[in-house]
Figure 1: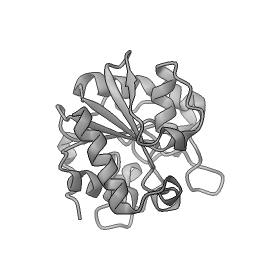
Figure 2: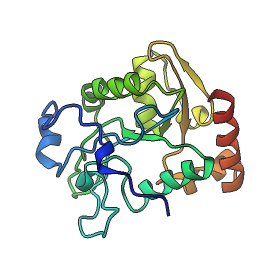
Figure 3: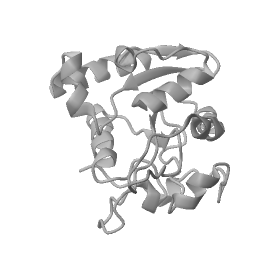
Figure 4: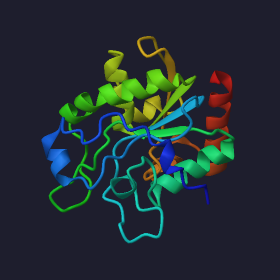
Length: 206
């Protein structure tokens, strides 16, 4: 199991942010980026899930106030980068839990991604990584939109680096950890091959 992040590594950019009133009303806590402030790799998720307040530690960003700290996705993506040997900085494209009608996650809306991008841009410019790894369609789309690059088909972008001139980084889209087992086989990889492909792409960039 990967180490749980140090709460002191939270990068609190705008305490009590209320740019998105609907999100502010349904969140428990803002899920801030966390990790080394000089990391070579910044990992960007889509948004925090509802999480589990009764979990011993890995309750999720909506309860811990730190991105990628859920029992499933958080531990899985952190274990991946531990395995690859990178001490990464973890954050989300949208910092607050987007609650759907049934109490679970809904997809973040375009305006929410747009409002929150200022925070993501500040994080990227502050950390100055060699690579931004986006996990999932919405995280990838948020970065590409800023660069005025069309996403077209998300799966076609996975493991295909994109040079982002405005941000001054390389973007490497990956599958979201929640859906990796569903889509990895459609890309022609088993897990060992997928991890090896990520390792090779990162090694060429970092």
